[in-house]
Image (tube, rainbow, N blue to C red; front, side, top):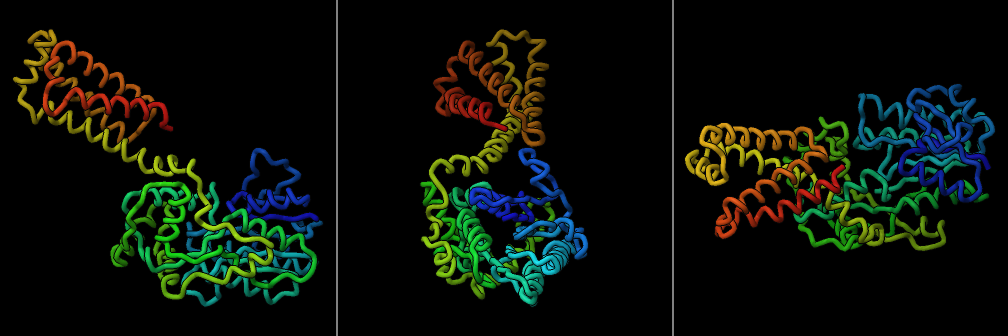
Length: 421
């Protein structure tokens, strides 16, 4: 069987492609750019959003037995992106499939999709679904809720959130999700494509149990064996303001549109009966508590810990620079420099140079963090520690530990040097 996978570099598309190839199918991937490890004869490079005419698809579908459409975006870059990618191009694709008599079509939609839905995302998906159902094709519309995949951007974000000690989310204890593992979803699509006979027209591809967003994060946390967290509800007026600000960040999944979808999930419940999916697979679905594993815990925590450590250490250098020049009596600082053998004429310039250098490191950490900066800090802080240990050993006995506190800082700088990207 020759199968065309549209959106084959996305999370779902890539897993479906591998599953079908493992099953012995000849699979052609399609996306804007061909991956380096794919042969040209096994890939079609296309701008999916520009394929809005039936004739555009006819050469692409030549010799194809089945089509799986995995193309989808969670937010628009341009105002018509949902309509172009979720409705116009798929409708043209379905018309071409009908003309050429393609044996099987699988459309990856979304739970909650409907032509009259509350959001543009759901409406555009729902319009394409309605068009496909009206055609004389052997087709199945697969509607997943939330999809988990270890390499998925949203899943990386959820693992990060699960390791935070305290966080606030809109509708954290009201909005329901029914997450399915991407491997289960890929197996469902493989069955739909390769199994002969009548397939279901619409299939809610959901996981084994519905849970709140806080519960889902708890399941991920449990799988990673991470420390307990406190998940609080973010008041909706604040959430709407945050969503408008977050929408200005191109990579942000939080937008007013996605927030409305979350609100709808809290009102109507974005859930379904998982029995049909489990029956199709012939086995139980993977539970969210088994999505993650302990080995992922450090990377999940590090995704927020690294920028936090960088910011805190930068502030340490900036505060040190300000205190050294403006906040602490110069006479005391010059006495310490004299104890280290610095001539009187050089004490003030050296104090100024040290303050400027500390400030420079702090600014660079905030604006352009680089691995070599951690090595430089390690050398500088280590040098300060050695010089003061030799010339001013009494600081080791100071009750606030100005030198002993350098030891964990040096260890932290060494760690950041070795693990920073």
